[in-house]
Image 1: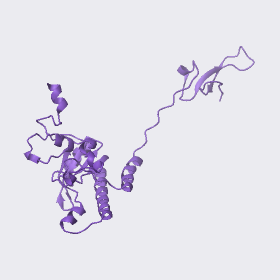
Image 2 (image 1 turned 90 degrees about the vertical axis):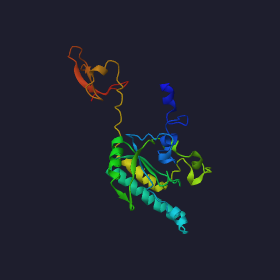
Image 3 (image 1 turned 180 degrees about the vertical axis):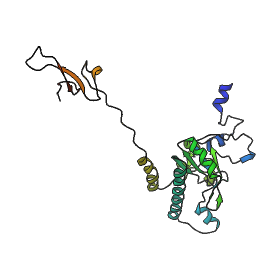
Image 4 (image 1 turned 90 degrees about the horizontal axis):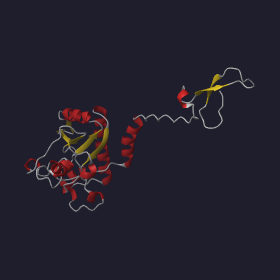
Length: 245
């Protein structure tokens, strides 16, 4: 029984826990949902609720117009500002996503996935005491760690019929140039791991007597003398002819 309950946890078969909250960290029913919203006590991901305001939506309500170019520039500036702030103050960000949905439970939500859970916890504590763009920031730990499960696949293929009121995430993309700048800068800052040492390609019998990674001590007798004591010289441990140094 316990194994069965564990297998259906967070799925639509689970009659106790809300599958939508488990997948996308939000539910359209909010506190009125008949199922439990199990908020995590630790997570790599935080959610900044309703923090992004799409200027095109505001322009439509005010009967104005905002071009696609202006909207993208505005969004890129917002994304870069938040992304940089998260990395500089709290820790390395693995990925950041912004919802372009219109439903109250998803509109303007920003999800930031840190590399370390400790950084996410620190960010939530600090951000709930801050303001952004004239409004108080509401941050919380989110159960979302795999955004592929949280996203609307029909939206990604341009086939979602529910539009902005879809219950799955419609993630707003940033420009390619900004993506290269933000994530490329992180790759440059991260030191490359050292290459593993090359295996020693030694002739039989030389391995145990090696005194360095690339040199071994070989016993050789001077030419023309069978009675002279052998002397130790350094040799390259390669297959075939040995060359004395």
